[in-house]
Image (cartoon, rainbow, N blue to C red; front, top):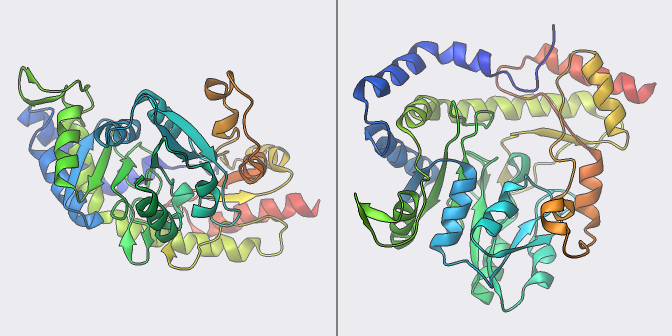
Length: 366
């Protein structure tokens, strides 16, 4: 049987009665934005992350954009972002009117670090956005110390790290703001587009609530220029059903990752590392291998839905590299040339892990 990269059908079937009832209830209520499910989800997700405020928005890109706008980032500012991540992190900076500045990755965590960031800071640096890539949190303490010393905001891009931890604190609870995507394949996924920003700053949360709703506190009265970035009620209802299952799903992901680690030992591939003081949530099980494209074809020929996250580093994307020569960021470029995500989701079986790992070993042995 084929093994997909993500199996959304299996998860839906396991929660079908609850999900169907929640969606139907949202439709029967017909308050389809800024309704009771959205308000309840904001309270529940804030409590889950260990913060005072959650602002539910339309997507992870909206979350980053609104957080930057609320913190005052705009034309003339620079924001330091990873080169190894999905392009939305840099895109949100540009949408806010600021300039993304790309930092290299640490070879173990594959995240940016204080060491890769500090040489890039100038008097124009307004914020730093560490991305907790593949579910592995960045080493936040040195980044927070750097931000405090230099007067620079820290925005966590936690789009791949729902429930991950650093020094006992959940992703999204450590920086000035935490930005989440609930894209349908995430550890906590909606059935469409959705996102959220978490923070302990009441004034920041209030400004983001205005920004997501056309700069308004009350209908037809607009105090600032905002946009339409509201989470819809159906997505909030779906997320409320799924949130209580998130920790169990993450535990299952960690168990499957350990099974992959053991099955791939000595195979010639680099497996992801869960570093000390963090709890990885394995949004992706992303290995590194020098014959990545050949291995990808080999797996797909055998019905394994492997994928690449992300084949072109952000600093080499045409959207940001046409006007100037891109910097040399060797670690990010090495990762991009070698990274391959194997299927990993709570519904995957140990037998499937063994099968997938067997194909990887078979390929490298041959």
